[in-house]
Image (cartoon, rainbow, N blue to C red; front, side, top):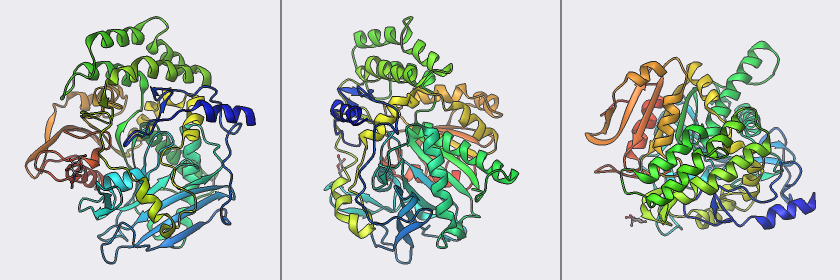
Amino acid sequence: MLISSLLVFTALSVSNVFAGQVPIVDGVLGGVPTGASVPGETTREALTIAATTPGKLRVTENSGICETTPGVYQASGYGDLTSTKSIWFWFFAARKNPSTAPVALWFNGGPGSSSMIGLFQEHGPCRINNDTKTVSLNPYSWNNEVNMLYIDQPVGVGFSHGDLDVGTSQAAAADVWSFLQIFFKDSRFSKYQPNDLAIWTESYGGHYGPTFAAHILKQNAAIAAGSVSGLKLNLEVLGIGNGLTDPLSQYPGYIEYAASNPYHALVSSSVINTATNAWSSSSGCKAKITTCYNGGSNSVCSSAQSYCNNYILSPLAGNYDVYYVPTRNPDPYPPAISTYLASIRTAAGAEASYVESNSKVYSNFAATGDWMRNSRPDLETVINAGVRTLIFDGDADYIVNYVGVEAMVDALNTQFTATYKQQPWSTYTVEGQAAGQYKNAGTFSYMRVYGAGHEVPAYKYGKLAYGQAASQMFLQTMSKKPLTST
Ligand SMILES: *[C@@H]1O[C@H](CO)[C@@H](O)[C@H](O)[C@H]1NC(C)=O
């Protein structure tokens, strides 16, 4: 076990890219580390941390960090799943009417990336400045009218700490559900349990979002039937930005987007041709993903990830920033947050040092091939159950680009799909400024966001401010309304 652990560790050469959520492994974006093996067998993080309280929260209230609006409650800390598994969270009460406002959970992707990225680079009460050391209050914070709960998961990510035994989205869902039970049982937060609950996520969240949402619905049904004991979670909304949900729909999108997108071609036509061949040849990427979908083992799905990311995802990126293609690689925006987080760690009550992207967690997922599994069936379940769903995609992002995401949306088989496909595109305006194009069908909406990279709320477009378009889209969806231009 120790030997394979060392192998995993030394085989990983993970580059630090700005805003990077997906690691570069041995030169391959989203590659599979040599010697990656299923979790539980390889990785245990040494714990030298203070006493945990299994089944309970440990909380630092009103640290004064980030949210400086007078009278707005905040709390950061840990939910201890066991004595050796602690999940980090950061809660910001809504700036307006928190007692009746819904609660939105936020998860970044990776797998292995911290949700502090979303908090400090995208839509939190404050945003990191270009100096990477200070923050500014965010007027378009998602906590303006919603109680926001940022969660670092699985264990080992961000400020979370403990056993690294999660290597699938399904296992991650079980831990998130357990964490939420602890959170809503706590006397400080039980008052929010009857309010509407939402899941918002991005990137690898195209897997996390549908899996977590479907798991919550399943647990609610089991609670109602008396076979599971716990608190019902009032899941009403799911939002997924630039999410990898259905790889079979997504991978042809890399070829099309690299050749043609609103900005510029990313690579030469000979690179496009080579990748096209890697997609469609008899033992190519399409065949490998299809075998994975048809009950493929961990190793089958893992080798599909390795092949497709080696021969399609990675080479087609060219020299542009994969998270924002208008700029060369690497784009210094959004500014890095690690220096700032180290400076506020103790005051916020965090015990572990900050790990923005945990390569061991990533490796655990790579070993099970979770990346290449299809989360579209779970998404269909959630949409058909009446959970209002918004899928959106920034048009300047390559890594989970809109071409592939729109193919996934068109492939959905739900009660709203026929209506969706009959809709023409409408221009989405924010205070009269065009900001994207969208379709609504029943409780489902999709929006392509103009000028936004992978982290949609971090960008601005036209005369709008940073995050302004994302804030409008978020608030309309949280009010359980279709997208509407203003
Ligand atoms: C921060 O840097 C980005 C480029 O990375 C630039 O576009 C932006 O104007 C800068 N912001 C400020 C406030 O200087």
